[in-house]
Image (cartoon, rainbow, N blue to C red; front, side, top):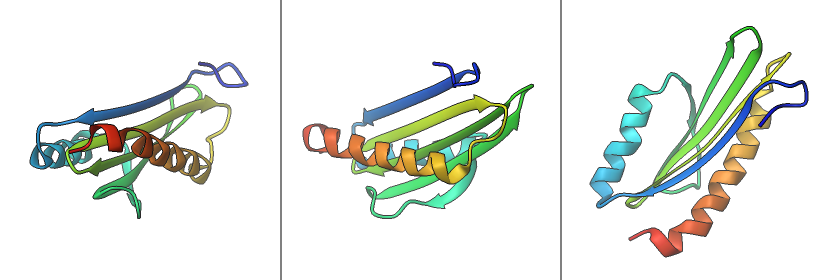
Length: 115
């Protein structure tokens, strides 16, 4: 997908059911330990654990990323966006969209998948 000014943009949504709450907790924590994105604080009212992560980088063009990562029971959900452009996209703009997408994803899959 390309942004209005022709730069690469990506949207990824992932929901994974793990065999146990403990395994899901480890998966959630490992994302925090290996991600190059910076913590943006907890996200309230979303699963058992949830946080926002953010990163702005310049690779010849401005790239803004935001991810909401959550754990609910034995399931993890990630909603991640990366937007390229001539200027950085305001963090709050991306955070609001990824929060809404993570909530919608959790609502959609939790009753069918979660233990």
